[in-house]
Image 1 (cartoon, rainbow, N blue to C red):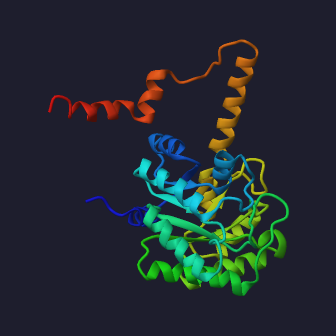
Image 2: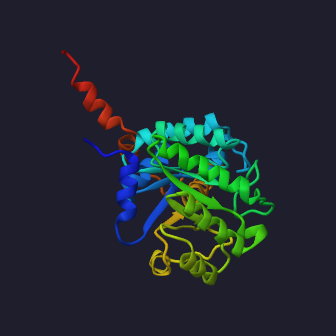
Length: 287
């Protein structure tokens, strides 16, 4: 019997070394990540807002929309998926419902953050965080939901670095660990020295968030591992690559040319599952 998604994530984090985690935005991108050999993915809120709504990551997606996207992603792959649950969609009881819903959808973990709702991407300006008591209440509620039966890991995130400073961000991350969070994430450190301090003071496992063009240095996985990180997240790499490729193809079509760099139709059919579908269908013909 296959292990539960949360158990597979726990086992992965127990292994030595760092896990590179490209982030997905739909079932197809998640399948590409799995096919490329990565053992873990994360459903990026920024990327889902961009692809589902063509809107910014500013809390515009509802709980139901996020959960719907997550179910499709989790059902399309066998690797563990961590979901972006923003601020938990309300008070402590909303957070508990969110944790339970994400577990039921098939997520191995979910991220809860301490931003003031509506939240925004942590590498944009205008980020605000709630006070300590509200931040701790969210994580306490999430951990309670896990301990009461939701089989899922809690990734606790703080965005306090941007407005209250690194000392406060580290205090919050350590407090989240004391409450029982499984993975800790201090968003948007601005230097390698800050990243080293985070890893020296915040309990493991720790996640680094690597946004191309963002505030955090884009260190190689080996450097991140040496500093002390266990997960290297790449939240926008695939979205940016897809947008770049689609713009190039559109420019070629607009110029009356044939786009280059495409995968062939047979590969595309196989990726979306036509081969498996036809093989399964053949079992029932003339039965």
